[in-house]
Length: 386
Image (cartoon, rainbow, N blue to C red; front, top):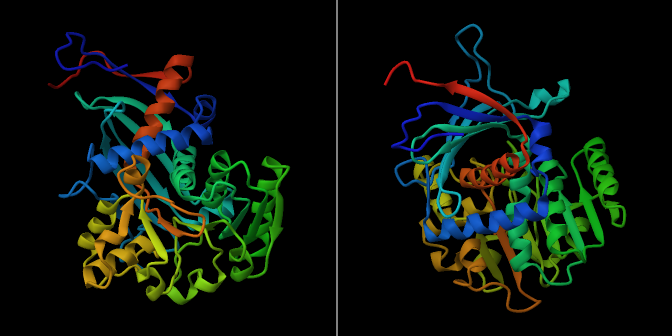
């Protein structure tokens, strides 16, 4: 579709992939996505990547709005209202760059739209030319679900049977679907949501796709946590601060539990610092960069509520040794210790990174080329300006 440096052909074509095209090209293949995310996280740990910012570890660039705009037509601040660009390069067999661009507004849901609406542009690493433009809501959702499932592959007990979900939104559902590909032994799912409507919607979604599962709606976080082999913290941050985050009390956690933390969650610092806890990150560079970008006054409580941000705050404070934190890519590559017995309790913090979009976009793009899926668009035959 694109030309490399040195080619005499100056024409550039790219592929447009709509959401139906993306589905046909395999974007919803959870099991394959877990494999690709494992490969991605290993490349991250090796350092074969670049993201934005001076340290090449930035999550991305975000546009926010004031509470009371002075200019006519400017949006006002609101729940999840922002625009964001997430660029990255990933090496290995992917050897490409790309950017996910999205706008977000919680009010979209009242109009039958997703909170965030995503597109992804995949670029040639040599010329910089666009190779594809993709509908990216499913791309983002499935890679978001697959990254925690890499933790399930390496850190969950082998015979895991029960999953507890606190915050059963789209993210928690795709995490569950990906986790089941790694632990088909799962039999029971317990759900604790904020509202009856959203909780029942999630329960229906799970029952429709996994008919053999026993899906239970529970009334408290404690009920969701107790007896669960795998836990998913899928609740967004709260203006009320950590006291409103899902609380994982030590006494409620089953021996051998794996707690997946892609969103706000709260633990007791003394437990986190103890030998009982095993702390895993998707990639430590992300949390270090968040700390550098936001400064010591913007703690995890005010940022995203993701536990890895709290752990990095503790590292910077000198209250938690950095050696206690391990990258999941290092564990997957056999460079760091994983689960050694069925009693260990693991916490896995997931911040999400644009390199993951690059790898899954590349995989889907290559599938589309092989199957003849999508619409070819012409950028130019000969550029007007050179």
